[in-house]
Length: 308
Image 1 (cartoon, rainbow, N blue to C red):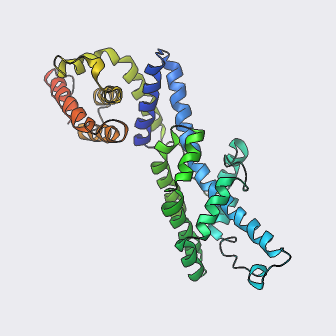
Image 2: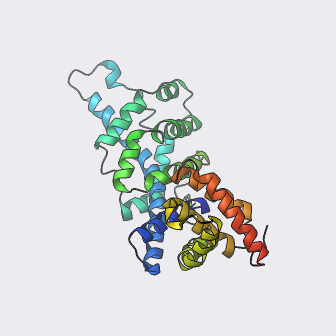
Image 3: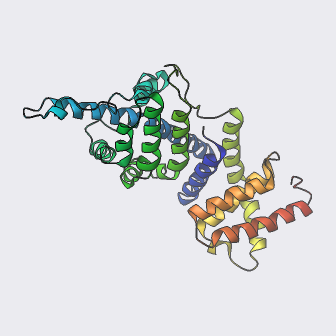
C-alpha cells in the first residue's frame, strides 16, 4: 500500500529534517523514515475506523432522539439505514482492523468528540445522505454511500485537515494518496466479504521496503558528490542560494537515477518534478527539470549511467 510515491515524499521530509537539525546520524534518519511510513499506514486504518465511529455516533443519536420525552412519531421510528449500514458493520467485524484498533487505538478519541459530531451533522445535512435514504435498500447502496461520503465530503473537509495537522505535520501530505487506498479498499468489498478479509499490507513487497532504505541512504551518503554536480550546472551561482527544497529534491532524484537501474529515467524525472510542484516554488519544476536533464547527459557522457 505504501507505494513509491509516498516513499519519495517521506524521504524528502526526512532529508529536510536531517539537514535542518544538522544531523549526521544515518541510522536515526532511517528509523525516522520507517516511523513516518508507519504513520502513513496508520492513517489508512484511521480513515476506515472513522466510518465505524460515525456509524456508532449515528446509532447513539437515534437512540437519544427516540427516548426523548416529547419525541415525535418520526423520532420514535426513524429510518435506520445509516445506523445499520452493512459496509460499516463489515468494517466493525474486520479482524485486522479491530486488531489494529486494539494495539494502536482509534486516534479519534471517542464518538462524542467535536470532530465526530460535526462530521455526522454534515453527513445528515448532505445531498448524499438524502439520496441514500431514497435509494434501494441494498448492500451496494450502503457501500456506495460511504464511497461518496469519504470521497466528496470527508477527504475534502478542512476540519479533517486541521485534526490531522494537529496530530502530525505530515499527514495532510499523505491524505490524498492514503484516502485513495481507503476508497479502493471499500470499493472492492461485497456482501460476501468475510471478517478475515485482509486489508492492504504496509508494503507491497520487500523490494519497496528496501527501496525506501536504500534511497535514503544513497541520498545522504552521496550528498557531497551530488552537490558538486549541481554546482557545475548552475554556473557561477552559489548552491546555497538555491531554494532549500529544490536542492533536496535534486539530491534525492540523483540518488535514484544513479542507484536504481530498473527505474526508467523519465519515471524518476516525472516523480520529482511533481514533488517540486507541491513542495517548492512555482518556478521550481522547470528549474529542476533543466538541472536533472543536464546532469543525466553528463552521467551518460561519463559512462556511469546506462539506462534510458
